[in-house]
Image (cartoon, rainbow, N blue to C red; front, side):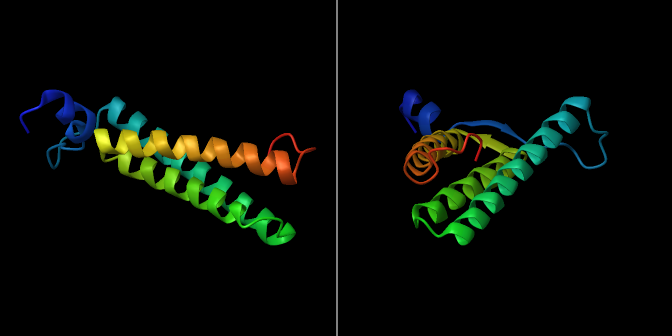
Length: 117
């Protein structure tokens, strides 16, 4: 790619898991992987809660998409534990916008008295 700005915006690999086999883990590797694992687990739990609420009340099909957005964000954290690229950062940013807009819409319209989820 000749254009460095495009390379940075869309094709750059910022970090990848390339530890030599048999090399000891550093505390940063353990912390980074652990954090991404915990974060992904949290997003998957949120997805289950949203899916469960959607099945219980059946107020909107948007809740299905809200749950799917949580699953996709969790998958992005699993990928981030192995590699961090520009496209993954875009995926996460777009997914956050979708999550926030779906949450705002669903909570305002169907659950106006709920405070957390």
